[in-house]
Structures are given as structure tokens and as C-alpha cells.
Image (cartoon, rainbow over all chains, first blue to last red; front, side, top):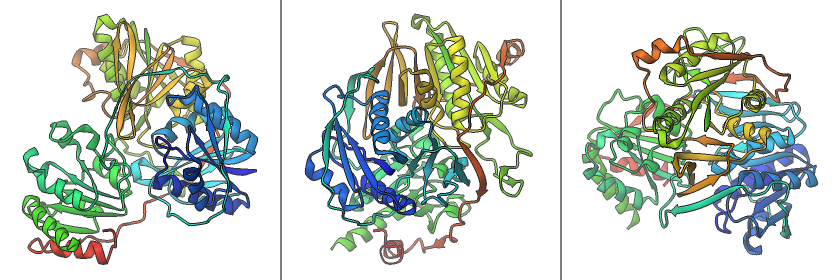
Length: 322
Length: 249
């Protein structure tokens, strides 16, 4: 028996969310009196792998295969299923991110394991296995009972604190065969942003809406974001107008994010927008309409002209840095 | 090429969610049901692909797992432009059960491209598309933000962390789509609404399948503390509070 956690790597490196995931897996394993095995697919060096042991992974497996050069959900599922069976894993944990959403459903069918998707807390109980999950785009939370022998959870990002628990586990690298699930995905082109904080990784996000009035007014917003080490985002009308790139659109049909701090500038806070940002730990609203719904979701608010307030915020943050 | 779009019906996004039966179910009284936003965009893109005859799309079918009461959602999809529809006469009790039913029908009817939205806005499970592919043993491509044809075969754009890839897979396959797939959902025309009435809806009875999960209860999100307002003449106070009270910067 074990808890298996799939720790994705990005060109051989982990992120903070990888360690949060291991911390979470370790806490679940504690509730079940069992141990955590961490699995990463694709070459990661021993030093990087060893970091997973700082957060409670008692066994660290790096599965590598020469045939795996692109992300193929069938081939990856095959590897994870084989290792889950070999480890006797009863709970398998993914991040609720791009790869977690691609792999968890396939693995669910292969292992006949029910999924709790987007959980944001430890299980409410182990017997029956009950998890707390977001539903109705954040307007309700369900107590979901998973009745199958094996369970799969995907953890909402930024929902569990890092908990240090060094194990000294020594990573093992294994060569895997993907004969049973051959790669059928061909990647013909790839575009990658570099040197920018990714919206889904950012701990602070500064986001602009129609209240910014024109794409020419984004200067101070971008400056504030850069001073705070934050990513920039926008509301749907702004991306639809082409004022900002589509990658920045946060909201129900855009990106779902859960940073520690979300600063909404000139965003009224339509239900669809809030659905994408309501899991943020703190929301700051800056809007000239005191009745805007964003103030209901915010802990801190300033009613006023965003374009006048932004430069003052920039100055205040510069003051901090001195 | 035959395209299938899987559609779910969900409460309109602005619905105020209320619970019933001792918080174990959703009170459906007064709920306005709509096609799940991602599924509506999927259907729109499928129809756009069919409009360009060079792509060789023969038909666009929609499939839905739900009781007869969800028929208006299906008719709406037909009014928007789907050629025909399949309804599996069962309540979609969980993702595993729903995907099992869809896979069974897809096996019987045969489709080349199956499009599913990334998630339904009610259960937020992000599971059915990948499960259908696995039940059928066919490839799935997730986080798809674009589908186009080149030389008669589909090319998919998928989002990756901080970028995107162009991907080719052999048909049949499942595309699990998200933001970007189509700009705006297509609106039903008057003619579309008229013809939708006579378009065929094939009803299948469900096959025996398990549900792996059950909802024991619902709760409302914890209420947020009331907003604390800061003097617009002194925004520096906000930075001070974020640093010393919230401790987030």
C-alpha cells in the first residue's frame, strides 16, 4: 500500500507546486498510516529528484524512456498505471493543472479509480473516503465520496502549504517500456514564452479590466506587477478587444488562478470573472464604481479612478524597496 | 470525417445556487439550463470546420447523457446547426458512468473526431473527455485551443505551460478543448430554430455501468470578510496593509 504522487517536471526541474503536492500527499499518507512514493516521468537529475525527499517522499522514482520525447497522455498513463500497480497505491495524486487534467481521467478508467478533481483540503474522512471539492465554479463545495478501491485526487493549485519533512530518500531511475501504450502524438511545432512569470505559477497577479480605458494605459500596471514580482492578467472584454494577449484572460472560460494576492484594477467582477479568481487568498479591488460586485469578493478596496491610483501604488511599492 | 460534440447542460452561470434535501442536492427550481459554455464553443468550432467544404466534414452530431427533460438543450444545439443528436436516456450520475455511456454509443455509431469541453461548469470534474478516450483506447489531446485542417487532416493546437504546441494524432481521437477554440458561441438563427424541430434525435437506453463517486452533501463557500476600504487619496495605505496585515507582499 502507498500514496503515489505524480510530480511533473519542466525540462528536468520541479516548481514550488511540485513540493506542495508532495506535502499534501505526505499528509494524506499520514491519515492512512502509509508512505508516499513520488513519480516523475522524463529525465531529472539526482540532485533535483532528491528535493522531493525534503517534503515527505519516502520513495522517489524517475521513469525514463528514449521513446518518450513528447507529452502523450496514453503513454504517460500506461507508465503511471504500471507503477501504481507495482507500488500497490491506493491513492494517486496529481496537480489539477494541464497535465493532471490530461492524465487523471485516463488513469481513472485504466485502474477503475474514482476521481476527486480540484480538491482544496485534506480528505474529510478516510472511511468512507470523502473529499472536499469545488463545484459550480466556486459557488458550492461538495463532499464527494469516492467508493472505488483506488482513488485519484487532483489538488487545486496553491491550496496546501509546504510542510518540511526530510526523509533522505535516495531516488531510483528506471527504464520503462511503453509497448502497451505507444506514443501516437506527433508535435509539429512548439512556441514557448521565456523569462516571464507564468500566470498559473504567480503568487501575486495584477489584473486589468475595461476600467483601464485603453491599451495605452497599461504602463503603470505592468510596472506595479514587475515591482511586486507578479504576473499580469486581464478580464475577458480586454482580451476580446485585443488590448492584451489571450493568455492573460482570467475567468471562467479563461485561466483559473489561485494566487496569494489578486489585484483587480478596473474590473467590475462579473460572476464569470470571479469564477476564475475566487480561490485567490486575498483580493484587492480598485474601481470607480462603489457598487461593483468585485468589492463583495475583495478584502481591500479603493473606490476611485484606477488610472490615478496606479501611479501612486507604484510609488508606494518603490518606497518599500528603498 | 464525422464529428461528435459531447454536450452537457448546466445551470446558467449567473444562477444563485441553492441546496435541497438537507444539502445533498441542488435545488433545480427556477434554474435556467444552458449548454455548458465549453461545449457550446466546441459545437461552434465543429460547425465552422464543416462550413469549409475543403475540410471534408460530413456531419456534426451532438451527444448528451440525460433524461427527457434535457431535450431543450439538445434542440438548442440542433438549432445552432448540429445535423443530428443522440441522447442517452440516463441521469449523468458521475463522470465514469457518463463516459462509459458515451463510449458505448461512439463504438456503435463511429466518429472520427470527438470533441469534449475541458469541464462542465457545474461539477468542474474535467474528466469525461479523457475517460471516453480511455474506454475506447484512442488518443486524447487535452487543453486544445485550436483545431484546423491541413491537407485533409486535423491539426490541433494545445496549450502547454507558458506556450503552445501544434499536434497531429491519428483518427479517431478525442480533443478536449478550452479557451480559444472559437471566439463567440454561434447563435441559432430563426431558420435553425424551425429546422431543429424536425432534426433526428436518436435515443439510446443506458447500458449497465458503475458510478465510482457519490455526493454526500454540499456546502456554501466560507463567506469572505467584508471589504475594507482605503482612502483613494492615500493608496500607500493599501501597500502597508498588504505588507503588514495580510503579509502577502
